[in-house]
Image: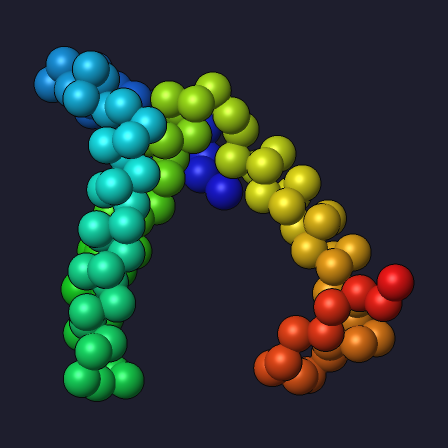
Length: 107
């Protein structure tokens, strides 16, 4: 998850440019999807894209995720850990270790 310094730097960057009013949840969600598509595009015809381009696009995705979390007033560490706990319950190790097909929990 982002360090406090990363989050602070991003907040300061946006504040200095007076961009906060553009950072609606809808615009940020769209931006995450757009940047993720740009990351995916790097792999479109190769499994070995330029590492620097991958890092730049990944940074864009993560940056917009941090901006959205800030706008929504949520802590990324908390929501990721909560989701991980749900996912651990849904996909127990005993049924899912080393397999690509997801095994749904048994009722």
